[in-house]
Image 1 (tube, protein in one colour):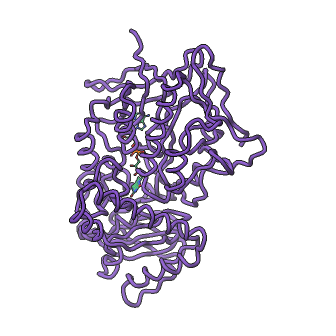
Image 2 (image 1 turned 30 degrees about the vertical axis):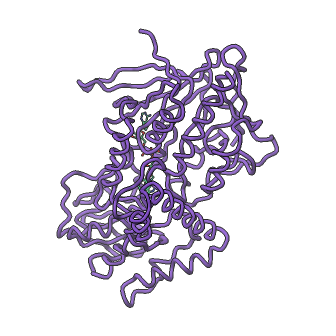
Image 3 (image 1 turned 90 degrees about the vertical axis):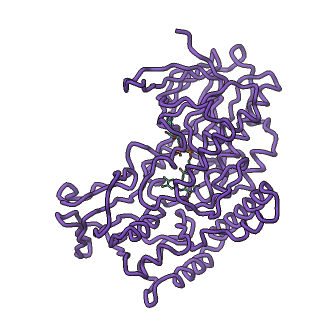
Length: 502
Ligand SMILES: Cc1cc2nc3c(=O)[nH]c(=O)nc-3n(C[C@H](O)[C@H](O)[C@H](O)COP(=O)(O)OP(=O)(O)OC[C@H]3O[C@@H](n4cnc5c(N)ncnc54)[C@H](O)[C@@H]3O)c2cc1C
């Protein structure tokens, strides 16, 4: 059978893939592209998670796309509302016609003589069987998110099998699990735990949040009054753009201040937690993180719901370590026993890059941990490949939109110059390389060796600031002397991935 050749192949139909599809169809109408999605539905993260209370902790004005105004009243919303917004966006802009569901990309090999990627995928047939699919594409755009879907991270606690109650992972929430009247222990800290606790309490459970390390909390109203006011007096698009800009500036200010004046920001964050806590409850030990602000993601608490659950006596925080699971619950390192009917592991994700697809150049496997990022979008020495990886300290979509726009600029530059292959050059040999991120979050630390590294200057740094990134991805010339353009099959040099020993 002849092999289909596309100009661009996008992996994944989550936020990143939808952003890619909109930008490709709008800015590169001359390119044939398709989005391959492993599941039967779009939305990625926002259609996967089902635990009670699942929501974003970003405001919808920045988690939303720049091209599709958020119309909801609240700006911090449940996952179901985010998913509806994504579905509505796909419908409104005709994006679904580009998506091919039920196809999982397994691998991609760059064939330098033909200047194309050969992509191997597996397709689920309506009968439930699997068949192999081969596709060719000129440009590969990986939008497959950053973590494994089949399982979350589950530390191996002693005696887990002994527990007589129900043990679930937040990523695999069973349908129909009733928590009313049950004693529930949530193991973990961070956004998922902070979301689960008030939601389980509201459903009638008696909840204990068992954390090893305290988190920082940011208490904010779920409704952004200024956004509503702007919407009342301005055309919708202006109001949305202004609110988006305001939220970008405020978020970026908090992040920069956290890095420049961590003590000041810590005091500010702890002060508003002290105000939200029930009378008489001290900050220490449960609300005083041992690390600086924004070294891990801040937990947003809309309308203080987490603290209200504590004040109502429906939830409690315990800072301790799991020593072992028992028949009735947990024994902690301090010797304390926690009785539980249900134990929830909110212990995080297992990081995975490029949708789990393995890459090779002319049959030589690429190790992601030895790649060096270029502009946080491409990789030094790897031709015609881009990947979306959102900000750690701001909404994912901000970076997804910039990445998509940049990829379109590269594609249009190739068209305008009659070239076919864009390959970023590597940093000078004496430039020290740094890890992907200086966040201390467990899921990043566990996978740091598999993540591409960054240089110390120029286009090889990974930028975590929207304004700087906007300039380098949308304003600076695409042809910057580092990204090399070549005509393709005839002139294409055999690609040599730029990698350095770990
Ligand atoms: C619990 C939770 C809460 C979050 N809250 C926020 C938040 O408040 N703000 C924020 O900015 N970010 C948040 N995030 C990060 C979130 O993942 C991003 O907001 C965003 O959804 C990522 O979009 P994506 O399209 O890149 O990846 P995903 O949402 O993971 O979508 C990837 C898609 O690609 C598909 N796919 C993967 N591999 C393949 C393959 N090999 N072949 C074919 N298809 C494939 C998947 O099936 C999926 O549909 C949260 C993440 C989690 C887990």
